[in-house]
Image (cartoon, rainbow, N blue to C red; front, top):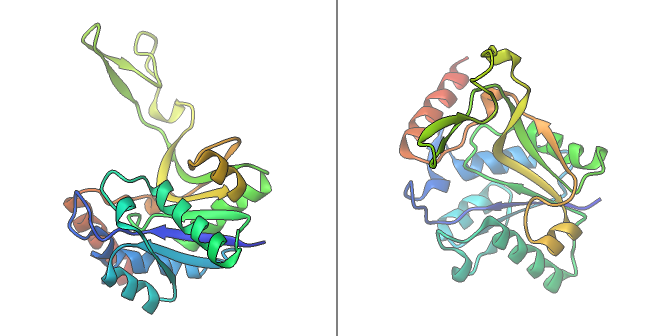
Length: 230
């Protein structure tokens, strides 16, 4: 079975300058994700989609193929799905290559491990799903603001009844943001990462961390350094 992993990695970033090549634990984020993907027993091909020459060089030096992303789909408002579609369509036109499964990896999750990647792929295959994602268990009280009543309202709990203990809440799942797997045929038809039957792989909480703002880099670098010293 052909399983293609794609890592979209633009050179620009709105929240953190050149985020995808910032170092965590002494390695650029893009390098950390490439290394995890190359350990996979299931991925048969790995491609980085980028518009940036430095990312091209880092990716190739670490064993990934590269597709140059057109500038028109490299802006802040461009969806990752467009980058995935661009890679798939190019490969099909140029090589008549169309994998059965697409794996979408985000390098803004620095602690992704091969178990998360292969676990998500296996969740897709074994449950005969159309798509799958990495998640982690979530046991917290959620609230939203009711604009009409100008008050907070419980989402996954009802404060008008006896308050439950946090551990008694029904299990919910937080999207890890790191790994997504999709049947290629369904993805090409729907042009989005979620469609049809959705399965999931539960990642340990200590591997679920997304970098969005500068403080996230500081925290993740501290965590990575601590892990290296253990």
